Length: 292
Image 1 (cartoon, one colour):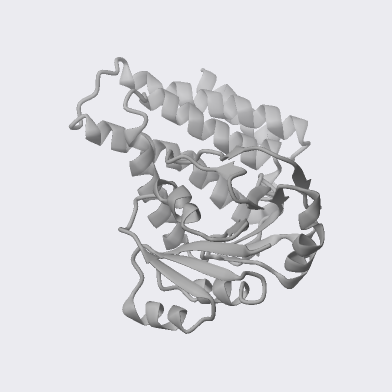
Image 2: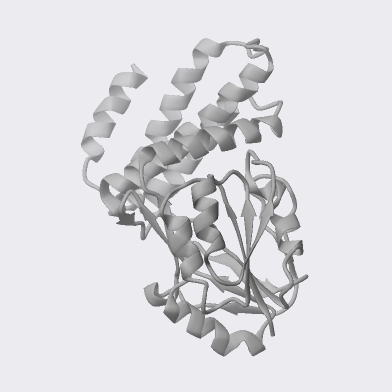
């Protein structure tokens, strides 16, 4: 059974070459979608065996082209991999051992963010459907959507040695660049988003990641990434507002801060008690002061 690996590459970081090198002994062909590579990067990639390069315009987000790129592959099985991910030798061997048992694999992903393996806050095991028989998994072109899947699943155990290694954000600038790009794209799909709804979504994301899913156990990394998710939805709203030519139909905008911070404090107190985190007395004092 022929295996095709599919990867879309834009930037010039070191990781894409490591990604492709990790596939050389696994895939029969490597389909590389050039969505904005430099000539130097292109030259280095052409030197890797079994590589076939397709050229596409640079998209604002990869979902616009993902399925089209997959359809260009020739394999019976397809591995879709991002250019900042590495398919480890242990995972390769595991997959090839179990290919006859299923139609697609759901694989744990080890997210390494700012040099730290994130083991909480839904960053682990972060299961992804990435290896599948062609035609059994299909993506649409909407941002942040899950694929349509059919057939028999093989769930890879959530152990580090069998995880897809994801070098997610090596600098905070990389996170900001991607968040701005995705926020702008998502704003186009949410023209009726209100400021309060955006803040509620952001708060829910922060509370669930940092408290419910124990992001605090990842230390400062956990806090920074959870709070960044809160800010992301505010970014989406600002782009919606920009699309309205900076006009707003929202009434009583002055009430939004009180509603937001009251809810944030209430949720924080609740989850600190549930998770038995020290510091409740400080927040209770602040709550009483704000309630006066």
